[in-house]
Image 1: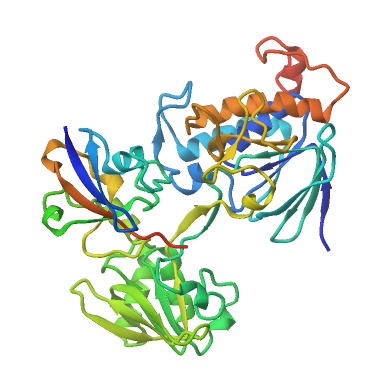
Image 2 (image 1 turned 30 degrees about the vertical axis):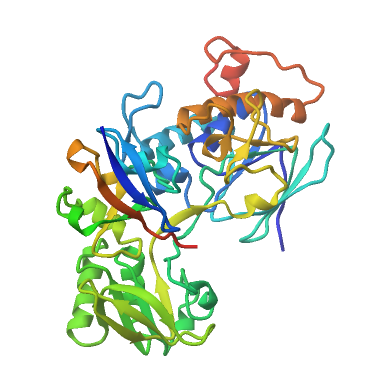
Length: 104
Length: 347
């Protein structure tokens, strides 16, 4: 067991209990924070776009080509990731992410 | 001139659930027309994940999104449904009574109108629309300086054009608009493109010969007094910023789903979903049903198989509206010769 910290679009930071084997998108969605996850985690829509805190970025598996292709469809920062592509493991206890803005 | 069509049922959305509803309605002798905003049938299955394997369709250990759609199309073929693709339902008006519902449905693109006895909303997450990048005040420039699609190329003649994106749309329009634009700039977040290789090559040669510009980075703000666009501020990965002069910006960031006009049809909504009962999957408006991902009820699971079940039950109630005098006899396709005749498989 462990937690992730998620800052929502209003700037409020939430500490969410995480479950091993779940995608970070699923954890965020399960706790009721506003993350769309339209395609359900298939890496096909980029509506689960998050910014990962700098010191965590290097500790994640790097994005696949498929994820990079999807990141092309949103306005990214160097620390952009799709949260459906981050599988939570105990090594990610304390992971810090911020929900990216959504377009109109 | 607008077409007018009279039919039993209009199904809004030609995704897997809308398609299977044709089957269930067809067995009950109910005719239908389907309307979808995409140029092809299949909804999310065909648009978002045609190649992705699905493992939870009963009877299919594995089927791809497109494979499922192809099979559904074969399954409903005996019922000859009519498709109206590339059209969005703009208005849905009730012109009947709760006991004998009647609806007028109008689409936006070429203004087809339908009169029907029931409407089945199988719209999934809503209608697919171009993804708008989260840039402040972008909406103030839409239609004058910002366009999400190219309708007439001539509009961009002698303009300073900024195209944003790295997929097929962005690259195709880059090479197509470059000859007529005053100056064309392509902006993408990285130096890798997921477009047809020969188009990427063509773009690279235009850059090499100095006939267009390629920048790597992201648009952060738009310049110019709205609605007149004058430039875009570009931020590179290293944090540095510069301005690209442009009269028009064309962001090609793919499609997303929006609820759209469904919100204006007098249906109760709960967080962009349509509440229904679990006996008939009917909305608060008698005669309008909602099945698949668009509906919500206690215990709802957003699974394709749930949508199939919902369509079967909705069809039972639709039958009462379409054939108020007829008694509905429950039959199996395995044993009923009358159903088998409808399917064209009777011995």
